[in-house]
Image 1 (cartoon, rainbow over the protein chains, first blue to last red):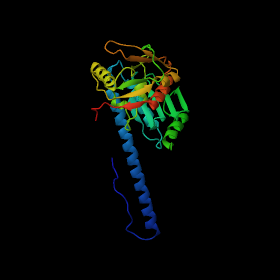
Image 2: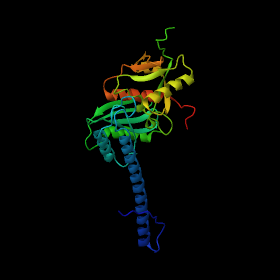
Image 3: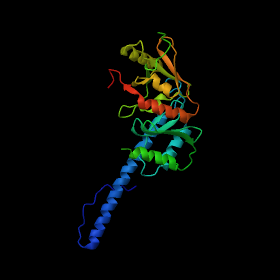
Image 4: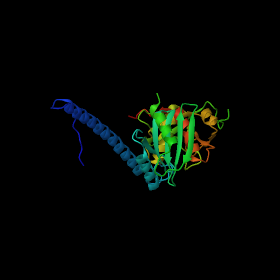
Length: 160
Length: 131
């Protein structure tokens, strides 16, 4: 894999064509930096997800009868991560004692979207946008994240 | 006063043993308040206990579970009841201050939204010797 790490600060030539090339290279450089940033965040999220899975793969991982996180839950969470559009920030991952991995988008304690990935498929979500507005439900998940969920996640991201 | 009756203004401690249930800003994730696979959420009453005793019970539980106590989330009984949960005094051997939060809905997403709201209202406390 070729990785571009340099930056383009100017052109050696003169004239409109040289300026045009210079602008294109600067734009390309910005794209490369953005792509590296996104890929880096994505890789960290994947690693965090995998760490959570491995931490909770044994029964009783909490010492209080927790169910093991299943490979189905892990695969479902991974597919969900794959399906997120690029403008969505990476979530934080955790696990619940019933064996579900969870993804969380968080701004402050009462502005949050939490999604669980049950072993039997689908997703369970709960969202809070201030004390008086809550939403929760279950929906199927295959390859695409629903518009409703994306809207909630974007709302958390854009919250003041 | 009947010590088995838990007043609305009494605080309850939820002990947290998983670092991943604590966010970087030291608030608690709702995952720390999910009851399933159990039908109730285990907590410890504050009334009648010194702060030191509350910590001691948490550390004892940590020893039983072979887990390090990370922190505790303090929540008010009345807030749980406002979410249609019930709080029952449920002493266990060695811990007369144990209680259970019961009457959770069956659906997971309905449990989650309650856990989200409890977590948003929880006051996080750390043991004195924690880093």
